[in-house]
Length: 542
Image (cartoon, rainbow, N blue to C red):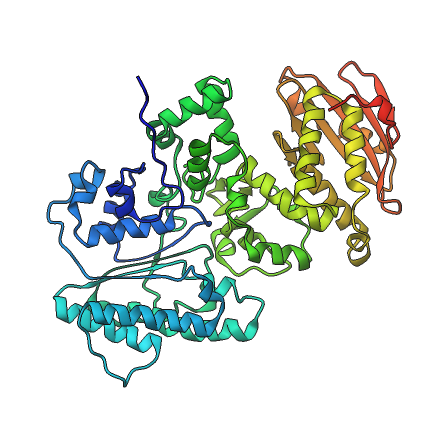
């Protein structure tokens, strides 16, 4: 019997298209019903490719009274009226967002389309986008006898795209501020309003006139309204999981663990609710491909621009605690943490109720790989393609316990580090950035500078068979690095694990920009010295 093919909605953001064309839909309508019944003005921030557009499209179909699209979904258990409301939906994610003139043209064009649709005649007295939007809301509400539903997708594109162009940024703010102020000014004519975006630029005062928006970005009741939970993946993607497991000769349990490590791990609230990136999962099951789909969907331009000019030591992002206000604030070159969190490179690992702080981490292997590919050209002087190849080789060496091969590849990576990295910043910072890139490159199950009771080892890497504890010393001996591992008891938390533990100390020379000497202490206590470059004859073929 031939199994029916699952149709995955890759790139499809229209709820109506998904439902009418038989594409797979993960039912979020129960949460949508709760949201609509509890709140009237809503703001939600989530990283790109997380289903925000589909969420708004679903809400639009609901308020348009399209009952047939919701048959069999959870919301049909609660709704019996299916009353239709006028919906004004604005998508600000287009390329015109980076150009103030084009952004204004888009808003005016969209407003004109709704004026024509509802037979509204405002006249020529009101020419600004904000003013015409306000009149549109009132006229449409009066004409239909219903409150308007306002949906604005990717509100911050025009801010992110112009953040380095102060003149364009100010013009976009001047354009959008009166537009959003209508959400409060025209309250009596509005049934429901929701705004989504990546960033939470509360200090840009875009919403100063619309301070009635309830920000649910950190609200645990809606922690999983975007993204896919493990339970949802197992329920809706069962066939995909089975097909993926068969292709890669894994059990269901084994392939599920691979998916958890690579694509799960996003957490946005105090609640311990984790979600997968939906775009990544859809591509994994459609193409049975376990590679980095999120990165290929488009790197954050703002983040890459930041990397090129930042004064921040990215190696410090591990183990960072931040308050909700800090994560919601503007970023700058000295504090990129809000940017990293808002764009999805960092997520919540834990929450401290006493201090109201969130512990942050890199969500998963896919993001770790994306971060390495962003960093490699800047701090290692190699292309993303070469970087990915070197990273695979490093992982292969650790899996096989080929430590000489590991040293040789690291030495070749460090040899490419651009001189300006050392010239423009302190040697210490440059060294930490290089080590951080190497941590990302290893990427098996590594914990770069994991905080322990007696300090932080530079890198702890885990494979199925081995544990490696690595300490780098800048312009100091490899012996001192190995001694630090022993003196601070870095191996102590892993002694009961059962896997052999290798302690590795390396001396890094800022003058020669390479690793001068390695000392490797095996699980049996034997110490092996490696002085790069390692002759190729000593390296097994990879």
